[in-house]
Amino acid sequence: MKNFALVTGIIALLAAGVWAADLDAKEFTAGPNIVTSPGYDDTRELIWDNGGGRWWLAWYTGAGSWVGNDFDISTIKTYGGIKFIRYRTSPTWPNTGWDGFRFGVYSFAGGIPGSMMWPTSGGGYFFVPTGPEGWKECAVTWVLPSGVRKFVAAMEQFYNNPNCDPYIVDSTTVFCGHCWQYYEGAWSEHQGYQGYKNVGLRVVIDNEQNPAVLPMSAGRVKALYY
Image (cartoon, rainbow, N blue to C red; front, side, top):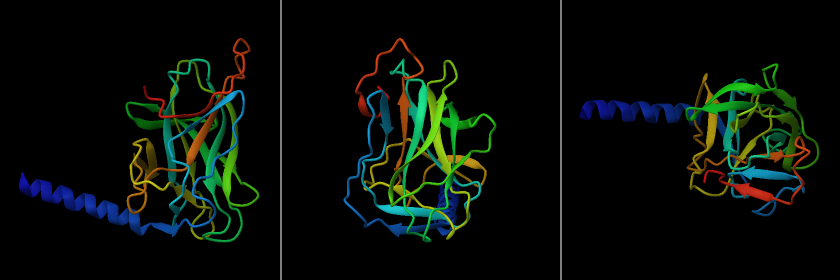
């Protein structure tokens, strides 16, 4: 049993080492620590990050490398539309200029991300932002299938380092427990960098598809698991 535990520990360390070797990082230093994103009267913003930034991260190989956050909107019965995937990125590292990510919404059943639901054609939706570093919005404008209240919003780096955009992890080492990575063909808990794991990726949901529901100023909602 001791030998098994030792071998298991070694395998885990080797796996972590492989992940670290394939990931590039730059310390976040630009701008104020807390950067909020705009809200809308008829939407709610779902977040797990704390609004701060600690590291910019980018894989050396981007194709097939995804990060995402899971969300549960079971307690918000009338909000079934996904309006935006909102994420924080920068055009200044690892290169100068915007390159873009591919985005997707995945099913979430059995405690792990499943198949891609949006885009319905599969493969992901490619989006290139504009402007300076900050929160960017990839328009989704799609309604979750009937009965589906749990999902994962994710983005794929797609291009190889340094010809890519980075994603950000926030400024706390307290892991929210809802961030994922798709790496080498499998989903697993997001490993992050030096203990920082919370991905700066948010989702804006809306109730615009239900005319019987009046718009309301709901603001941001964190940890919808209650």
